[in-house]
Length: 280
Image (cartoon, rainbow, N blue to C red; front, top):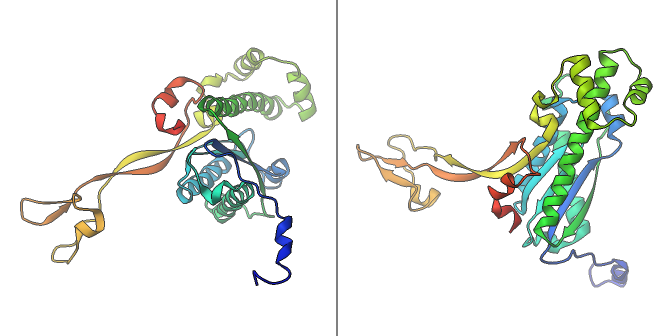
């Protein structure tokens, strides 16, 4: 009971509200995912099934928590932007991080067989989380630019590394030694000269990561069957229905926001200029 003599223990709980009127970025990372990917035989350098599963979990999180306006993912991590006006769980750090991490992990586990139908999940995957409050829009842009730049650096390295191992017969130690100290231009040259691969033509998913935003889509309500009784105004609003030439009520297509997965540059201005609402 709340009023019992034991209730004093609540005094040991520390308040952890995040700063008001700041953007919140929650980053979830796969815990020990190098081992997890090895145990489940993920394809190298990129396993599209695993990446799509991550996208699915992120999309489910955005569908569940409307305060999330943007998500960006690469490899085994995803970052989520919460609006400055967000009041989710009274902005309590522990509640936000624990809930988003557990929900993401739950969806990942539940959807595993949809993307890996021939591979049983041998043990529970785990994602850790953290949240950072950013006071200015430029901080948010720089954060997501940092993550996408990291995706490019890591993917370029891994693409060359696994080409050396899988196609050149090098051991992983030899491949590491080959690439040690090399700059980006050298890696591009190795890919093109030795393997005939133009890095810029590889799938954008691998080079740029996944960007999740809400976009308007035109959706038509389900039309009532002829003779059926249906209150279209009550279901879709007073302007959702019009009268057709034959006198039957016809549903009008209405815009609806839907979470979509993009593979775009989020470092340059265009992405943000096209979506000014993200930084409000």
